[in-house]
Image (tube, rainbow, N blue to C red; front, side, top):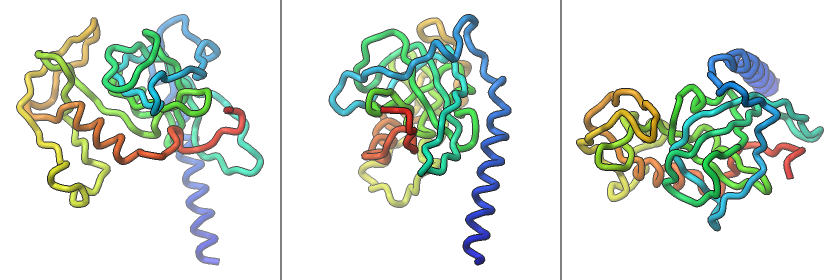
Amino acid sequence: MGNIRVVRLVAILSFIGLLQGCAVISNVENVAGVTEQDINPKGTIVNEDGILVFVGERIAVFQREYDCPSDSICMDGHYVARYRIIEILQGDYDGDTIDFFANDHYGMPKFSKHKAVLLYLQQHNKNIGHMKYEYNIVNPLRDGGWGICTDIYEYYDYSEIPKTQRAVKQNLRFSRFRDGVDFGQAKCRNGYLASDAISLTLANNEGRTPAGLVLGWMD
């Protein structure tokens, strides 16, 4: 009985968290003229592994209602997004903008709170989906490339990563602007290269579905 009560309590708290998360949708400033109906996550990532990593500028993010399959328990919010591609760092995609879906247990995806970020997408049948919770806040470097001030190991057990594979912070020469986008002032001098974060993220997401749940209407 005790275990059942714990499971029920977790379910109730998770549902409350989802409702609370839905309330922050208005915090995202969408480009005028783009509606939720305009965004279609059906598309194709060209490369064989179906993974696309890019720095993108937010155009619009919306919550989209969906029907939960009768044999499933759906506790995530479902969102659709459109981003302008600033630079592709891994993979291949034909287009200057990209539409994709994202699922998040805690409400509006955190990546959407930033004007431009490093995003990880993956082919999911005929749709393009966001790797759940995966993104990095980046700043352009003066000599090209991208740097990261935040701790890329924050959600990993650092002790389990072989020493030969651990990234080391470097003294980076940050810039503020790239491709007409103001990324803001970098909050560090020593940071990680974007390639370090990409290697870590993809190694720890191998074989995982991009959204973290199966949506019945997606084929």
